[in-house]
Image (tube, rainbow, N blue to C red; front, side, top):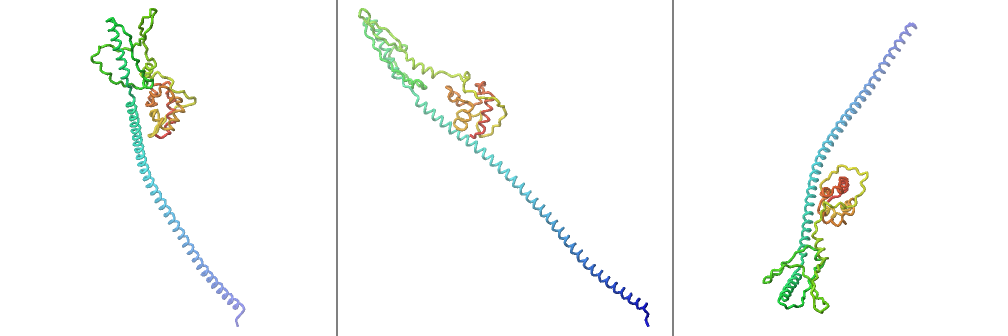
Length: 320
C-alpha cells in the first residue's frame, strides 16, 4: 500500500512537470511574438530610412537642376539685354543724327529762301540821282555861258524802312558812258527864293533820309556778346550744393544749343525756369545757336558753376 508521503511526492513531481511544461509553452509563445515584433520594427525603420535618403537625394537633384537652369537663363538674359541696349543706343544715335540733319536742312532751306527774297532794287534812286547831276552840270554850263535858267531837280525816291532793315543786295548801277566823270554826292535840293528886287536867288538845301540811314546803320552794327552781362535774371542759388552730374547719351545738357532746347517743350520749360527772360533779350538771336557751355566762357559771371549745375540737373532728365 502506497504511503501518504509517496503520494505527496508523486503529486509534487506532477505539479513540477506541469509548471515546467507551462513555463516552456509561455517562453516559446512570448519568444515567437517578440521575434515578429522586432522583425516588423526593423522593416519599418529600414523603409523609413530608405525613403528619407531618396527624398534628400531628390531634393538635392531638384535644387541642383533649378540652380543650373537659373544660371543659364540669367546669362542668356544678360546677353540679350546687352544686345538690346546696344541696339537701342545705336538707334537713338541714328535717330538723333537724322533729326539734326533734317532740322539743319530745313533751316538752310529757310535761310536760302530768305536770302533769295531779300533784295532791294535801288535803280530808281540811282537814275534820279544821275538825272539831277546832269541837270546841275547843265545849269552850271548855262551860267558860265551867261544863260541862267531855273534849276529843277527830280525828287529821289525814299527806300521804305522795312526794306532798309533787310540785308541789302545792291543791283549793278546803270552805265554812265559818255557822261562826264563826276562824283555822285547826295543830291542837293535847290529851291528858288525871291529877294527884295524880285530876282530869283538859288539856295541849296541838302536833305538826307535820316530814318533810312539810321536803320541801315543799325543793321550793320556788330554786337559784342562778350560785353553783355544781363542775359537773364539770376535765380536764387541759396542752399544749392554743386555736385557732379553724369550725362548719359540721348539727353539734353549744357552741351545742347539754345535752339535745340527750345524745340523741346519740356527742355524749354526747364531752361526758362532757371534762365528767366533770356529769350526776350534783344540780342538773343546772336547766341541762339551757341551751347550753354560756350556761354560759360562768353559770360562766366552769369553762366557760373552753380547755374551750369542747376541746368544740367534739370536737363539730363529729359530725353532728346
